[in-house]
Every structure is written in structure tokens, then in C-alpha cells.
Length: 161
Image 1 (cartoon, helix red, strand yellow):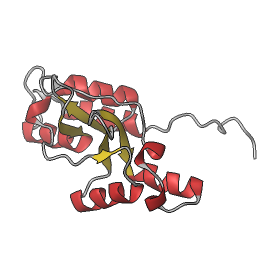
Image 2 (image 1 turned 135 degrees about the horizontal axis):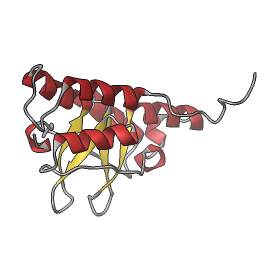
Image 3 (image 1 turned 180 degrees about the vertical axis):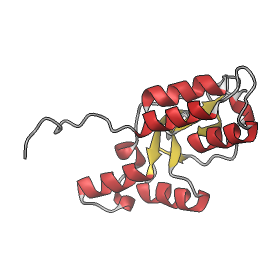
Image 4 (image 1 turned 30 degrees about the vertical axis):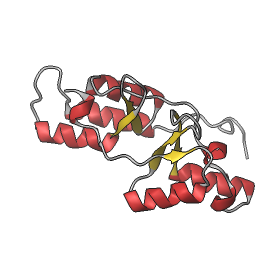
């Protein structure tokens, strides 16, 4: 199965020079928890921002979301897939990097969709319990979810309090 068969194609994005309050409003309006971030000048995807990023940036800086730019809070590590990639390879990348959503970029690096763990789970459910060769198995989706949700090592884990 190809990513283009499963991905969400109506994707909102925010520019890196816009305030976090706009990103939060877009997330609310689109009922999503993350947005791809476009460079303010080139329009290329340069990051991802999540609702958690917005909350933590506001709290850590003790400032309102309208006074912080997206570039200050976004993740600059962009992991992406292409529409022609297999869903299993995209799922593997999500598992490896512990991410729940992948921007989908075409050959010109233009944003054409987003692939979420929910998209993959829905596709696996549609296939039923006996997927064809090379298709998604429910067990793989469960393993991916478990790996993504596994806590990352804390710098404080060896400290005693």
C-alpha cells in the first residue's frame, strides 16, 4: 500500500515567522495536534510544531503565544515521506524516530499531505485481520504505537530525589 492511498490531503501549515497563537488557532480550527512549518520566504517545509510545543514554549518563556514566533518553538528535524513510498516504510520511520505524523512531500519538496498514526491504524482496520502480502498488519500498527509512545530516556532518570 502506498502512502498516497492513506494520507490526509487537506493539510494546514503555518509559516515560521508567524506567532504561536496562529498555529494554535489553526490546530483548533482543523482539529489537529501538529502542523508542518513553512519557511517564511521560500515556503519549504522546515519544521513541525505540535500543541505541546506551543504549551511548553509559552510556559518556559513565561510569555503569551502571540508574543512567540513559531520558529522559536518548532522542531527543526523534519522527517518526511513521499506519496509513492510504502506505508510500511513510513511506519518504520515513525517508529524509529518516535513521531506520530509525517509530512508528505512531492518530488519538488512541496507539501501534498500528512500521514498520521491514525491514518495508518484506519487503513489497517479496513484491511481486516488477514492483510495481503506487503500490506499492513494490525500487530505492526500496535508495535509502532508502543514504540512511539515509549518514554525517551530522561536526563534526570539516574538522579535520586
